[in-house]
Length: 64
Image 1 (cartoon, rainbow, N blue to C red):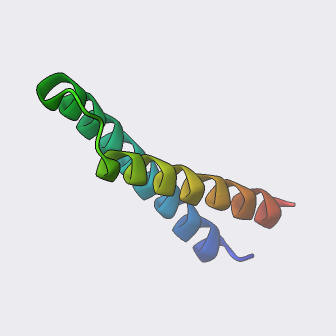
Image 2: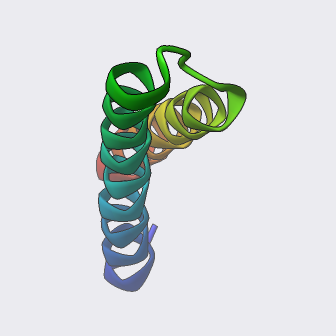
């Protein structure tokens, strides 16, 4: 992989981390205010974690 692709994957990793954090914050808000976690925060956390793991695998493959 070239340098541009690896930089793009690192940016994508940052975005997936932000999605996980926003899902976690929304989960905390939903539990404290509404006493129910809700489906949207869970979806954000799971999709962000999957995207993060995929990016990590692709970054590691590119660096070898």
